[in-house]
Amino acid sequence: MLTAGLLAFPHAVPNTPLRLGSSLEPFLPWSGLAVLVLLVLALLRRSALALIALLLPTAAWAYAFGGLLLPEPKPGRHTLVVVQHNASDENTDPAGTARALAAAGPDLIALEELVPATLPAFEETLASDYPHHVVRGTVGLWSRHPLTDTRPLDIKPTGITESWNRGLRTVVHTPDGEIAAYVAHLPSVRFRATGLASSWRDESAVLLGKALAAEKLDPVILMGDLNGTVDDRGLAPLTSRLNTAERGFAFSFPAAFPVARIDQVMARSATVDHISTLPSTASDHLPVTARITLAMAS
Image 1 (cartoon, rainbow, N blue to C red):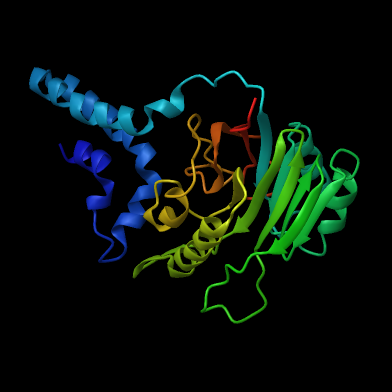
Image 2: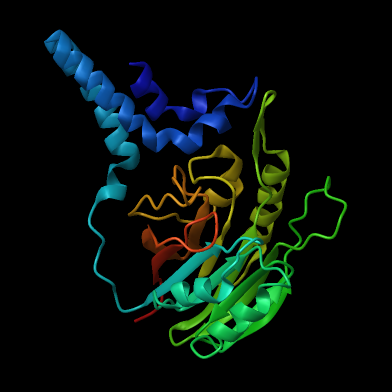
């Protein structure tokens, strides 16, 4: 009953003390393991009542996450493929990373943690297949299609005093029409003895949400390392405005043993049909790739 209640009503867990709610929400997909443990215990006890009771958490998990397991739908006419990757500011093989991302054949490649030491390698390696690119601060977007009207996004929390530019907005001119593309890298969260430290991330999400709300062009695609899952209430300013992936878990962090997808692709006036991970690169994140169906006129 407790497992089923948690799955059905995760927001009932308060964020005080220690921001328990936000600490728990990124790991909700893994609650299915608790159902398996309970199943084993029920079988060991040979309890028919326990097996019947297990229908509750099983149904709750299936309702919350079962759709992500469904087969990937066939691509439609107006389909855009994007790759999102935190390339790491400590990447020792940026050229190899760029080749791995381009090998997936996306239309757009969004990158975060671009630094002066690695940026030239990304630019040179991607230049032939992605002739259009923009970089603002530590985030960038590479595109097969022309880009215009690029500007930085002001998503800097008030508590950060040093130079900090981790967001951009641009217009992608695809054969199907114009798309407003956003690339963002929200501040990191930390687990401490006092609980989850996410105030900067949450504030940055609010600022990004306001920018998205003010965007007049449709469709909109947001790609970025948002340092939170789509179940995290801290990202509500974004998930309340944008569609998230309908298929695929795509756990992306940490690369050595991924437990959560904090690298996101979201959209407005478009459908994120499927999201999955790509093979690891020289980053502590796995790249994710998503297929998006644009709501364009036939």
